[in-house]
Length: 347
Image (cartoon, rainbow, N blue to C red; front, side, top):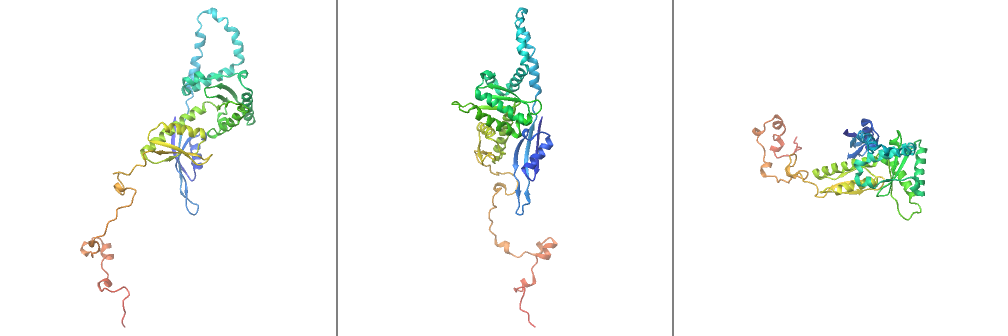
């Protein structure tokens, strides 16, 4: 389900608050695009209100659940001979002890398999506590302690990927609190945990924290936003400024814009208010022969027309059709006498 609407308010924050109330979801799940920034007059009054476009796409979580249930009966059907079923009995005991962790790992792969691709799924491996370094164990415990202080119990699954280490955080009913507004909570804890992982280490290890596939969903949403903005810029020729983003999200926008011909992007401002500006490489389009004021010279000054002698001639009263012209444009008596309005008065 996709919801899209333009909200108008005195400030950008008020417009975002209206979108949150209308859609009924948290602000981090909505993609905002600033159409017009508010402008104030000389006395502090709002001269022009802010306009913000809000887009919300509901995630479809039903499909992964069906795949996990469909794959479950495939495992017992594989061994056909009954003789091979005997060694499976002792294996079931340790499996029952770690049912929760195994189920979480299966769900992680199913949720990310359509988005992460076959290559990353094949490279990703699950790490046990014995395979983790001391720094990684400390970082994992540090993450759990922070969320415990927030009153949230999280389950952490650790995987090794081609780019480094990925930790999947899960909770029963507080996934929004784990992620935070626009992923700010997740990014902040990821930064602190990354310092612990790379402390006193010669080789740098990239740590990525994720929760319920938030990173991949956010990446898809930002790529769709970049494509939409690029089409708008190509059509109008005008630059568009996006709302402030963190470095991770700005890289996604820049990467997607670089794949589209005719547009370019750059970052302006200082963190945390640094924004992405998308511009056209062909320049702004002219008005052309479109209708409206000025025709081909739309948006510019009108050409100067020299006045002709006919313009200074006195008009005939017969050519004046309306009563207004006859009453107010007919010659005055003082004009006929070639005298001023206040002439000489003789007694």
